[in-house]
Length: 241
Image 1: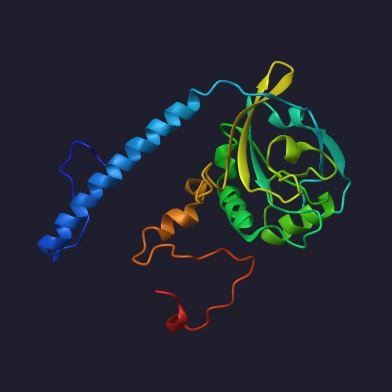
Image 2 (image 1 turned 90 degrees about the horizontal axis):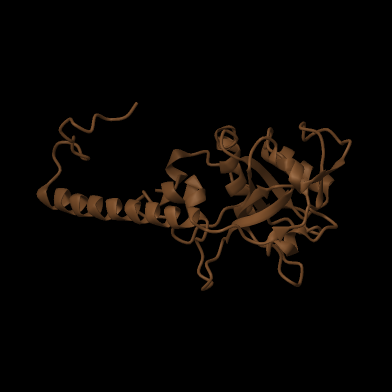
């Protein structure tokens, strides 16, 4: 249920707000509306992209839906991941084969995807792919509580390199990709890494609710960086403002 657009608009502030606050908030509301329009324009331009290059139908490694189960592990072709959908959304999890843990930022993004995966699956197939061996990847997913997500290992394949989700030296790259089933093959449609083409960050921030909520706060996001563990906050007085 949404608000009745024909009804008079309620103010976005409680009684007692002074004229300076009201004027500043209304100016901000105009900027927020312009931003929404620009986001819609970019989304429309994105939808107009032509299909990209063919993608090799590589075999990735997957285990049982229960991430705590040790196996059996099985190869799954990329083309088989689409199911009944024409599109496949891939989150490229930064998890180097030699690392003991996945990237904290990537893990935060997947935490967010996990919460809405059942909604995404109404529109597209969705998987998380990491370069770590399947056993290590699944153990990490179980630790994070990613039940219900399809986690696949690209260990021993060129999948990450082919999609540019890996640097030539083997360093992993955080990125989201959209692939399209085209006849019997798979084609690339769209990828966006965490950095824009000019090297600046926040390339996929709109895909994480964390950043958007932090941007609502008086101190914003600052230079905060996600962690795989956080120290416990036992005293409310110790909580950040």
